[in-house]
Each structure stands twice: as structure tokens, then as C-alpha cells.
Amino acid sequence: MENSYLWLKVLHIVGVVLFLGNIIITGWWKNMADRTKHPQVIAFAQRQVTVTDWLFTLGGSVILTIAGVLNVHTSWSYSMKWLHWGIGLFFLSAVIWVVILIPTQIKQAKLAAIFAETNDVPDVYWKLCRRWNIWGALAVIIPLSAIYFMTFKMQA
Picture 1 (cartoon, rainbow, N blue to C red):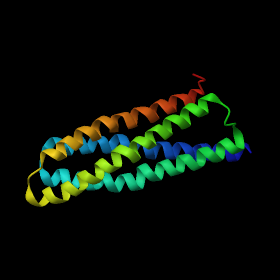
Picture 2 (picture 1 turned 45 degrees about the horizontal axis):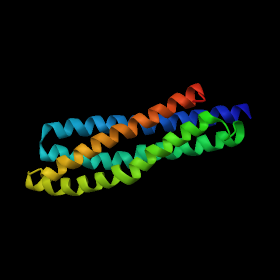
Picture 3 (picture 1 turned 60 degrees about the horizontal axis):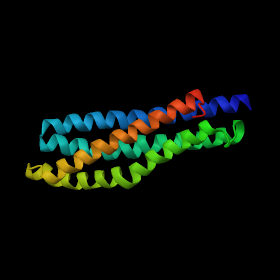
Picture 4 (picture 1 turned 90 degrees about the vertical axis):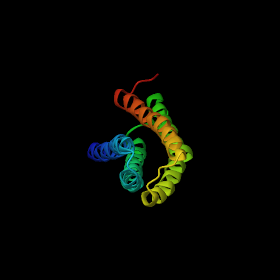
């Protein structure tokens, strides 16, 4: 039992690192590409946002969710308040991704495919960038808060 708990904990941490590492670094690189105002650089970065989200954000969240659920079933109880906070915050971040960030990224990617050829970044792209940056920052802060509850097992 103890050994399975530790292996599941390792997998859970790997999932967290992949998930949070990607959303933080992707935000950084996308913003740096946008600052160049160079259409081909922005378009390339926008394509990479999509690729890395599929590989690392989604992959990491699947790993951390599966390992976390298995560990709760083997080692903890869902009645613990710190677990409710951690799961709730993670779920809230997921809602922001599904409802706001992914649709925004899809629109940006479609625009980027066009302006990579035309060399003209339209104003609507920059408006979408502001939305992506604001909601993306929130989608990073929320799971970082979940780490607090999950690590310190605070009852809040």
C-alpha cells in the first residue's frame, strides 16, 4: 500500500510539472512572440501553443488526475476539505480552459494561418491576445493555489 501511494504520488507530481510547466512557459513564449509583432513569428508560436497544449497541458492534466484519483481511493478520503479545495480549484482552471482559452486559441490559430501569409496581423488578433492573457493568468494562478492546499493539506 505504501509503495503504491508513493508511485502514484510521483506520477501525480510529474503530471503537475507537465501541466503547470507548460501553461507557464507557453504563456511566456507566446507573449514574447507577440511582442515581436512579426507575423511569421507569431503564427509559428501560435501553432506551438496548440501542439504543446495537446501534449503537455492535456497530457499532464490526465496524468495528474488519474494518479490523484487513484491515490485518493487507496490512501485518502474525499471528505477532507483540503482535497475539496485542490480538486475544486483544478476543476475551475479546467472550466476556464474549456470555455474561454481553447476557443480563443482556436480563433487565434485560424487568424495566424492567414496572417502568416498576408503579413498583416489584424486588430481582432490583439483583442483575442488580451483575453487570452487575462484568462490565461487566472488559469495559472488558480492551480498554483491548488498546490498550496494539496501540499499543506490546509482546511481553509
